[in-house]
Image (cartoon, rainbow, N blue to C red; front, side, top):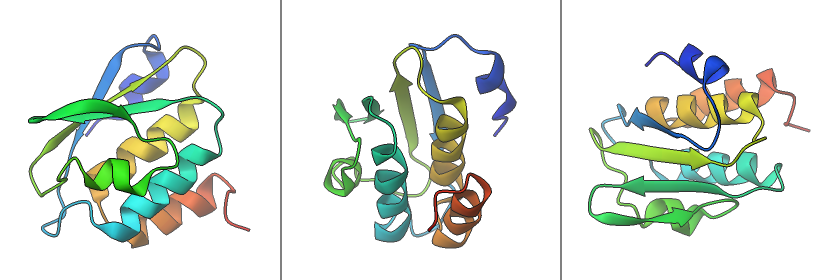
Length: 113
């Protein structure tokens, strides 16, 4: 997945990532995404085939109800002004779908305390 397109994109648009982990986007990476998005005081919307768009900011359940299995494309929508580094980390986490990658991303953007 080429995340570089996010750096030049206008916000309010849709982005997407395909889940590559054979276990899907399970509890640990979903918890990471929920924690990551809680650092921003703006909604972030996820949708997937067969599931309505929902605000998943700080919501593990919101993410898990999308039935995030391997191969599923998750669409992400943010409003203007959403931090690009957080959006990139969310998209990377969806694509990677594992807590090891999530931990590296957390460390990279200095959110682990």
